[in-house]
Length: 161
Image (cartoon, rainbow, N blue to C red; front, side, top):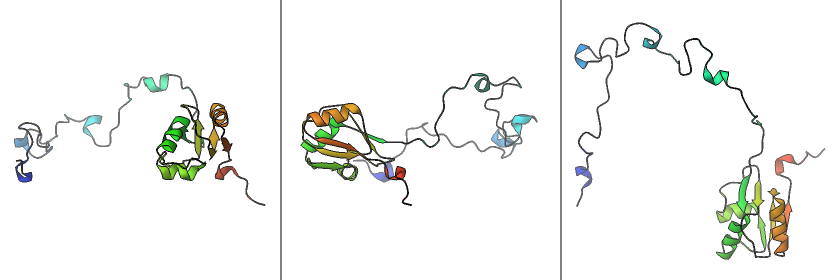
């Protein structure tokens, strides 16, 4: 039986840290393996994309696209998963809200809202209330005899004047 105090790594699996600049006997004393003078021998040097003065590749290539800084990030859930959770009695089959989806563990957090997609089949007659849904998902729920309502996210509702 292995005891905790007898555990050790395989021989040669770990190497001691190289202590730089600790005298001539260490092999990396005086200049610490950095050579003599020059930019790279000094601290605070960052020449990752430097190409000797030539325009670096990342600057020569054209830039494409745009990342919207205030875009909405929705938590996505598929109809097939909702049906699976209803079958396993983790979700109430009658009415499903965003909070009940989080409580059941189907999604971790709401983010800017929950969007339902049409992947998978739904057979239960359910009433779902979420921030967003695809056309296919709405049609599939209505075909099963249920209702899928899309509500505006809390942040988009105008302030009362």
